[in-house]
Image (cartoon, rainbow, N blue to C red):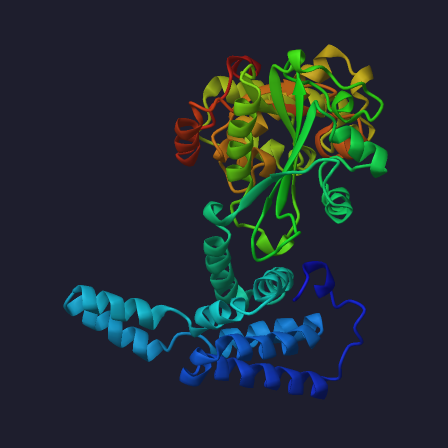
Length: 442
């Protein structure tokens, strides 16, 4: 059985081109056998042989295998054209079925058969991680990546995922993975992790039956009296746990994806909704479900694109004027290049004028850029998931990472469970649902 962490081949000696060609040829031969009529009857045994050969490959060999998938396991253009012409002439069900069959790349069926063998799904996830890295220099593999995403999106849909609470009684191996994969607020050893699993904290993870013991994504939650404005109190490992009577708000303060090979597969939105429903059953007094989130794209946007964006067409005049005035104030104080401001920001020492200007621009960035391709990724996730842009928090994250990425500003997104569907639809159509306090900033 393959294990995801063991699939890194960085320590494997790089084979010579001739050796790699022989390896690829063995994989290709096995793949053709797997797709043959005889292979269908013995698919698990043949798939195991192909997986064993693939596992021997260096990452460069995996990229070459993806090239083989692109070249040798693509649809037949002539067959697709013929089926399309027949369907266009007579759009019957049988012709549509024939067209669909002709257009499906054989590599999809190859990956399906590989996934049936023990460890097949794990290797496919690891292979996609290498493929995603390779796309920067091999854009012609985009169709292969689309097939991987299509299949993994089906295999890892919410119906197949198991949600489990992670606590101090969980296995040491799982707890180590939580420490390793925490991507938002680093866990400083076992004492820090233990505090994050105390009775006023929760950690939930999604698992898949084909990847036992491997968390796909996990969320950390703080049960607190009110909507939090700063991260430090939530991750203070010396803080005393609160009693259950104080649990009024469930604050999602960290969401971490554990499997780079599943990037783009929707996992977190389902996890948040299921956790909220679970917590509401466990603590009926909970009335507010919110996040305390970073704004990882804000500093970069402020440095590189804000001047052009705040002056773009289509903005309400009042919003454009407020954003332009805030940008002009920063430029008047620090010059056109705001690098010195970003690198030297000290939120506790900032005067009200500077604070208000930066909060205005942060509000503008989240409320008007999130629907665009270059919008903040965390905002896109929560707003696309049906949350409301609720509140900006000055000096919310004074860590080095928080200052570098968002000048210390954090944001609360509110999950009103009865409103998430409507909010999601409005976001899809280009509108960010914001609280009045955000509107007042703009």
